[in-house]
Amino acid sequence: MSNEYILETHGLTKEFAGFVAVSDVNLRVRRGSIHALIGPNGAGKTTCFNLLTKFLKPSKGQILYKGQDITALAPADVARLGMVRSFQISAVFPHLTALENVRVALQRQHGSSFDFWRSKSILNQYNSRAEQLLTDVGLSEFAQTTAVEMPYGRKRALEIATTLALDPEMMLLDEPMAGMGHEDIDKIAALIKRISAKYTILMVEHNLSVVSNLSDTITVLTRGRVLAEGNYATLSKDERVKEAYLGAGHE
Image (cartoon, rainbow, N blue to C red; front, top):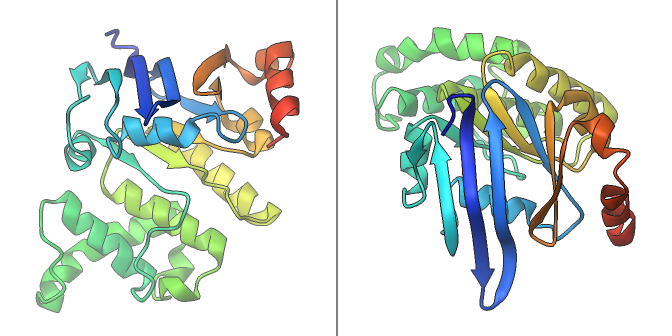
């Protein structure tokens, strides 16, 4: 594996009772890039994500992360190696404050258990870093706000903050703009662009405007296979890509 690429797959395949959801996918994600995975509904994008982060076991194929074969590893082991994902549905503790949510993630990153019963002074050791992460994602004013009271777009920013708290080398973002209005989309897109200076990002995203503005490389899936790959300027002129979207309904 070239040092240029942080993640590679070779012949990645997933079958469900005879149905091939992902078929012979060869993917290479360059270090320090924003790489988007797009395609029509049912193209296999989320299945591919679940294979990469080990929430699903491949039927065939190999996954390499930083040169290490992670095909047989458990999700938690992959996360410990520095590849962490977010989900379509915001995954934060709704009745903890933003600061407390990030603090929980910091405890995990430092190898501690989730010490809700520990003294306040011990937990407060994480406050400074948690506050910095909230500032990094534009949430400093929400530090003492419970997650359930935060606007949807701010919850997604909080989820990114908790992901950053794990200090990953690579972040996999599953539809980070899902369910957002234009204002929140602009904020999260700017946030992703900002953090990409330090992290490699692979994202599944439906919003093609976001994809065109953020992505260095785009892989197009259709019917579980790689249809095309390149930058947005190149793919937007590709007749096969146009047909795939128009034939299945533009996402």
